[in-house]
Length: 137
Image (cartoon, rainbow, N blue to C red):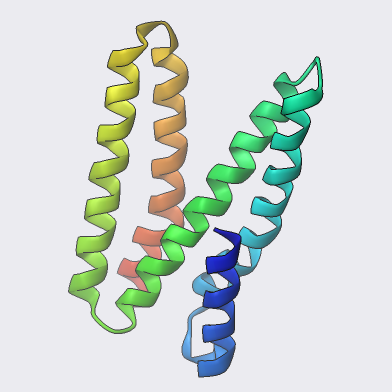
């Protein structure tokens, strides 16, 4: 994911950052430290006895970083075609929801946690992707 971020960042700077809205640039730039720190945190999980805090922190930073990248891809698609961006966000929304529904049914003992994770991810998508898509394009 980090490699794709640097590719997208290079593309944005090559084409000119002024051609992209602030939401795209902000999420792209913030995704880099999120994904970097999540890698460090997941490394701690592998050798720390008390790793629960690192595990949660890694999940949050990974989720934020990955969702920022997903939002950027959709918003960049919108600069070329709003219908493609709508299809992109709809497909992502549906697939993420299906994934978490399967997780919930597979492990009913963790259903509450999985539902909270789903809501967290969908809120990031709505705030960082769908609302900017509606407002800016």
